[in-house]
Image (cartoon, rainbow, N blue to C red; front, side, top):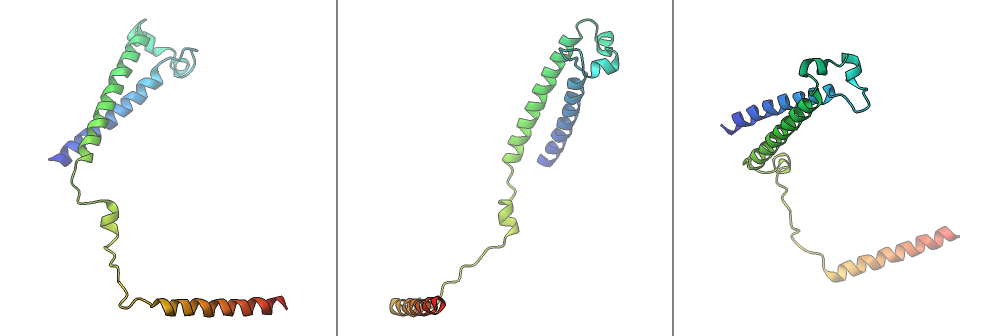
Length: 128
């Protein structure tokens, strides 16, 4: 049921978006350029002398409807229980293996001492 509502709202949103694009392109600019010059001021002959007010009001109403449908879609899809995030679906659970025996502090210190001694001999050999 929710999927059907989402599909219907998406179709309505696409239709409103196309209508909004069309209305914005039809409107004459204040400088008189744009598509008004191409269409030969067809908007004034269709809508009369108050074409600018009719188009601007229609643009306002369609923009408000587009915004409302977009917010409604965001609310509906935000509250859906999909079953976790995409990262949880893609990445399997990683098991962390703990070492059976932790190294003793004395053996770590001895390893560090032997590494330091080796690096000292390497450095002195490189200098010669």
